[in-house]
Image: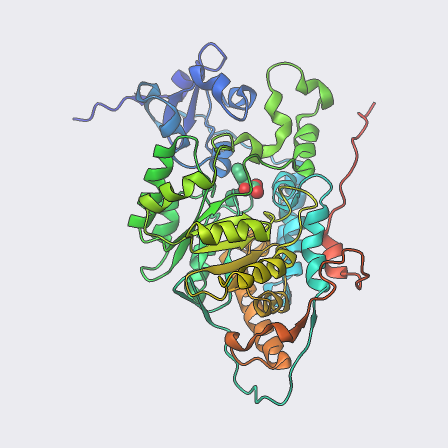
Length: 499
Ligand code: 173
C-alpha cells in the first residue's frame, strides 16, 4: 500500500497566504511557507500562486529539480487529486490574442530565407518578456551590435579557377563529426519561447548531424534532453559552476556517464550583466513603477536571469582547473576568453580549447567581438609554438548570422563557431522545423560561399582568403546592415507614469 498523501483542491486553497503557503507544481503539493524569503525571485511571485497550481509559471524558468533540491522532504506534502482542483479559466489578455493572431499569420517557413527572418518573426510572436530576455545585451548594447559589425570589417580575398564542382563543409569538433563548422551554442530558458523548449534543438540536431551544447539553465532537464537525442548524437554541456562544488561534481560526472562529449565551462559570468531591456520589462509589468522597489521585493527589477543565477560561484579561478581535470575525462573548454593573455594561460593550464566570446553581448559592454579577439589570440599562440595544435581547439561565438561569417572565423584560425540566438529564434518561431530550416539555410550558404571563395574543404580556408586589416579599427565605415537593423530594438529611457 502506498502512503502517499492525496490532497484536494480546497485543502490546498486554504493555505494561500504568507503564514501558510502551499502550491501545486506538476500535480504535487508543496509547503513553501519557510522558503518564501529565500526564493531568489522574491516572495511576491510565489504568493501570487499561493493555494493554487503554479506549474505554468514555474516551468519555463526553473530547472525541473529546483523544488526537490531546495525544499526539505517533509515539505513535500503529497499529490493533488486533479479532479478536485477548480479549473482556472485563463483569461486571454489582449496582448495574448494579438500574439496568437500574429502566430497564425507568420510567413510560411518556405518564405524564410535567412537567420534575420527568424529573428523578425520571433520578435513579433514572442511574449514581450521572452523577447526582452533573449534579445537584450548589457548596458548600452555596444558589444551586442559590435558582434555583427566586426564581421563586416573583414573582407574576402577569393581564389578562382579551382574546380569547385564539389565542396564539403563538414568537419570534426573536439573529435566529434559535425555536418557543419557550427555548433548550437547554449541559451537558457527555452520554454519562455516554445512549449518544447530546447528539445526542438536536440531533435533538429539529430536530423542534421549538428552538435548541441546543452545549457546548465535550460528549461528542459538535462536528462530529458539527453533522452531526446539519438544514441549516436554527440552533445556538449555548458557549465555554470555552483558555489557548492559537490553539486557541480555530481552534475559533471552524471553528464559524462550519460555520454556528453565535452564540457564548456563559462568563465565570463561571475556576475550577470545588467540587461536593461529585461530589467525594464519587469518594471512595466509590475505596474507601479518605482514604488514596487520599496519594501521586500528588491530583486524584481533584475530580470529573470539575475534572479535565478545566484548559485553561480564568483570565486571561480585558474586554481580550480586542476580540480575539473580530476573529476572528468571529458575535454574541457573555457567559454568566454577575451584576450590573448588568457588564451595563453588556458593553453598552459592544459585545457582542450577556448571559446572567444563576450556572451552574446550580455556581459561586459564594450568588450571586443570574438572575431577581433581571434586575431590576437592566434598570433600569441603561434609566437609560443602553441598553434596549430591538435590538442587545443579555438572557437568563436557572437553575432554569427551567415555562413560567410563562419568562413571568416575559420580562415582566421577557428575550428568552428557557436550560434545561439538564431537557433533559439528559429524554434520560438517555428519549433523543430524552424531549427531544421536554419541548418539548411547555413548549408546552402556554405555551398555557395565556399565555391565563390575557392575553398573545397574546411582545410582550404586559410588566412590569405581574408583581409582583416581594419578589424581592430572601430571607426571605419561599413555599409548599413539593414536586415540586422530591422530587428535591432533601440534601448529606451524611463517612462513617466500615465496620469
Ligand atoms: O546570458 C544569460 O542570460 C545567461 O547566461 C543566464 C545565466 C543565468 C541564468 C539564466 C541565464
